[in-house]
Every structure is written in structure tokens, then in C-alpha cells.
Amino acid sequence: MNHPIAIDLPKLFDLALHHIEEMDWTRAAEVLCKVLAADPDNPDALHLMGVTAHRAGLSESAVGLIERAIRLKPREPRYYSNCGEIYRRMGKLDPAVAYLRQALLLDPQYSMAHGNLGSALLDQGKTIQAIDSLRTAIRLDPGNAEAHWNLSLALLVTGNFEDGWKEYDWRWEANQKQAKRRYPQPQWDGSDPSGCTILLYSEQGLGDTLQFVRYVPLVAARAGKVVVECRPELRRLLESMPEILLAVTGESLPQFDVHLPVLSLPRVFRTTLENIPARVPYLLPRPDLVRWWQEQGGFDRDRLNVGLAWAGSRNHVNDRNRSFPFDTFLPLLDVPGVVFYSLQKGDAAGSSPIPRTNTSLVDLTDDLADFADTAALVSNLDLIISVDTAVAHLAGALAKPVWTLLPCVPDWRWMLERDDSPWYPTMKLLRQTIPGDWASVIRSVAEELTACACRQRNLLPASQGCIAG
Image 1 (cartoon, rainbow, N blue to C red):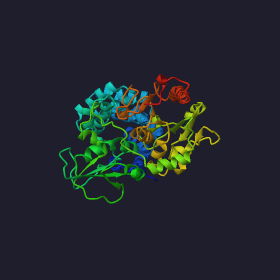
Image 2 (cartoon, rainbow, N blue to C red):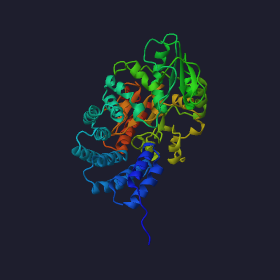
Image 3 (spheres, one colour):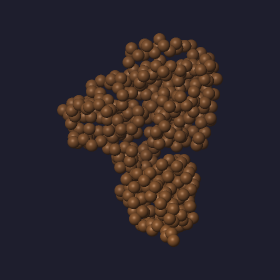
Image 4 (cartoon, rainbow, N blue to C red):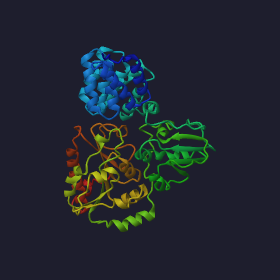
């Protein structure tokens, strides 16, 4: 007679939780499969299997598993909170908020649910409500790193830089993918650095580096020497900055006394809206490259020469909202009196093939080796039109007219409602008014571009000019 094999469910649960704490999602799933084979309606196992499925990129399966757990155990606030957070990360904000509010009905003191609700409200553009939820999460659990981090973003997007920069340092604890640098030398706290060598290093995207290297001359004026570590794509461009020593990420560093990530510079310099170091240009193209691109580009000075960038890095947390396929730009190609130049590099260039037959569009990107080349090409253009990506930051740093196209809920640096940027005097911001609606933004761009092209051909009076940001 066959007897069933005994299963020690508590032991298996402990093992699954151990794998989850170690972020070993594959092994966690294997153990949980054994639990569910023995007990298919175990709500805790279904919930944890949903968490591991989400971590494996299977978000639809994840919410299905957790919703099944909720039906079996409908008064467990953790289930609702995690289901809501997964829906938020999927961009499905209405069910996210509904589940998170239900978690708080079951447990009003649940800090994580308050924090997750704050994140969802922030994604909906309900910034004031988000700040209230995030502050409640922190009051209930002062060590809730994610709540502190998201509070920083909410404060910064509203222009509350004084409080926002303080909270922004929580990014290290909140972001598991981003490890804080550990050096034997101390981190610079803003004290007098005279005679010291300071290492400034990149920590996030290329656009972040381009935006915050504006602080390097301020550091150089106070320190003995400044070392700037950057990614290889930026090395030749940043060589234009005087009084610094460049180091490339991954290579050996010179000796230094103190260090600081570039995104901590606004806090050290106590940056407010009133004192942003916004003198441009603070980056300069190489003259030899400018001449080379002038010869290669065949620029028609009787028409507007406009650069286009439609996508950023796919690794960006909000890329699905800030980027779009090239086809979105197609209505612009019908604007008379304009020659367009692609500035798009990376995966998005290949996934959105440019129609080579269109004579108003030029693609020279195969010759763009790095950002020094891109800067030289940009310097030969009259206007840049870009989504929120490194190209927009580059154009702003070069003091070129740039129109930056923003989703309905933008990154913190673009703030809310305004059509200009305190970081870049030559930049104009064009925003969605309805989430996902790029078509109306492109229509507005086309109208303004038509007016600019007419001005270029002396068909409009000077008062109607529109190139300047």
C-alpha cells in the first residue's frame, strides 16, 4: 500500500522566505511549488508565489496569484498592499490605488501600504495627496526608505528643494540595484575643501551627469583639484571643462581626499529655485568636430535644421511613459521649410526604423561615436526636439534652443505646469495634458514649428519668432 510522502510545510516556508530575502527568486519559486503541490489553496504560498512571479517579470501572473490568495484570505492587508504595488509598477494605477486603500482599511497603521499608496498617487499626478501619504508612512516607520525616497521626488517636483534634497539621500537605501560607493576616504560634506582633491562620480544616467556637471566649476573654485569620473561616452565631451581631471568608469582612479556623487551636489550647495547655477553654456563642443560635422551635414541655411530624439534608455523606471516610437514624429515631417536630423542612438533607433525615402529626414547617427560627436552635430542645428532623455540635457547645457516633450506626470526635475526650465534657459517644455496622449503634443509642436519655419523664410514679423526656449 502506498503512503503519501510527509511534507514539512513550516520548514518549506522558512526555506522559501530565506530565498526571497536573498532575492533568489528561482529557488524561492521551486520551494513554493512544492508547498502548493501539497496544499494548492494555501493563501500565504499563493501570495509569495505572486511576489516571486513579479520579480521574475511575470506581473500578470503575479496579480492573478495574489488575487486568488485574497479570495481565500480576504482580511490580510499584506496581500492587498503587494497586489496594489505590482499593479502600480505595471502602470495600472486605478486598481493599484483601490487595492492599497483596501489594505489601509484593514490596517490603518500599515506603513508600507501608506508608502505604496503615496507612490501610486504620485504616479497619478496627485502630488499633494502623495506627500500626505508618504509623510504618514514615515511617521509610522521612520526607516521606510522607499517612502523617504518617493517623498524626495514629490517635494522636488513641487519646487521644495530645501526639504527635497535632504530626503533625496535615501535613494541609496531605497534602490537595491544601486550600491553606494564605499571608499576609505570620507564623503565631502560641503566643508572647506581648500587643498583637497575631490572625486565627483556619476551614479545614474547620462542625462543626470550632463545636468549636474554644471556644479563642477563651483567645486573647482573652492577645491585644490577636482577629479570627475564619467562613463566613456562622455569623456571627450567633458574634456572641454577646464581645471578638472577626468577618469573613466571602470578604470583606476587617481589619488583623492574626499568624494561625492554628482547628484548630491545640489544638497551640498543648498540649491533652491532661486540660486540654481543656470549659466549656459557650461559645456562646449570641440571646434574640430563642429567643422567636421558642418562639412558632413550639408546643412541648408535657408531652412530650419532640427534634431529629433524620441526615446531614452529602456532601463529607465519611467521609460514607457517618457519615450515613444519614431512614428509619433511622422506628422512633423510634413512641416515645410524644415530639414530633420536624427539624434537617436541605442536600441530605439533600430526598433523604430526611419523611412529613408523621406527627403526631409537625414540620419547620420552611424558617425556619432560619443557625446562629443553629438554635441558637435547639435551645435550645427537650429533647434532640438526631444523627449526627456540625455539629448535634451545636452542641448540645454550647450545653450541650444530645445523643446522637451514631457509625459503627463514628469520626472521631478521638470516640475509641474511651467513651460520653461529653471535649469536650462534655452529650453521650452511641452507637456501632455492626458496620460499617453502624445498626438496632441505633436500637433502643438507642428504648429509652432510651422511658424518658426515661416520666420526663417522671413514670412513672419520678428515678434512672432519662436526658436528661443
